[in-house]
Length: 164
Ligand code: HEC
Image (cartoon, rainbow, N blue to C red; front, side, top):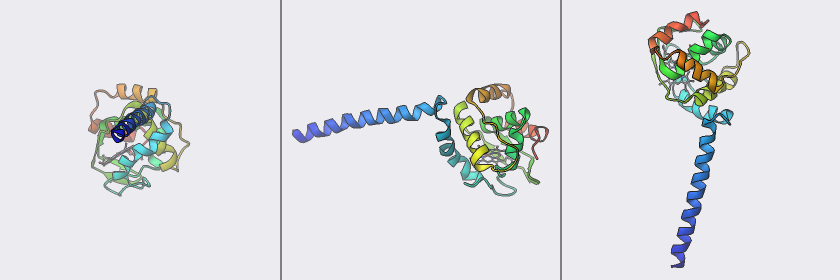
């Protein structure tokens, strides 16, 4: 009987801990700790783009100079946000190499997209123009601006947005 009470007690404590953990996980989605979630989200990007962001030439483009160059102008920032929102279907040319592949939409909310792009722009892409962080509200505006575009149309934005 005593043992049972003990188990019950732990069960409640466990539930409480679970609730607290859930609360902690929900916070970043509201943009309060986007720095912490960027690296966590990037692990899924790394499955294709590799953990260093070097990519696989001809298959998965590097997340490097091209990303920083794009992030330095409004059209490029729109392209970057829409790539993550909608996915991408080339052809595109990145750092002199042609890519004719498909990136699936990533199913992230605005804060998550801002966080992962900021992680890429600061910790993964280390060369190129200085990087101005994205905010969740900027991503929301860019998402809305591309509501009618598909992955192929987003690829067509690359060159005009300063991609190279
Ligand atoms: C399933 C593989 C895959 C995953 C996962 C993936 N990508 Fe991609 N990504 C690609 C491919 C493939 C391309 C190039 C598509 C093409 O050839 O048109 C690409 C292109 C890009 C580009 C455009 C690069 C440029 O210089 O124009 C960016 C930015 C990007 N991905 C960011 C991300 C981020 C951030 C994540 C994680 C949230 C991510 N990708 C997850 C496969 C992936």
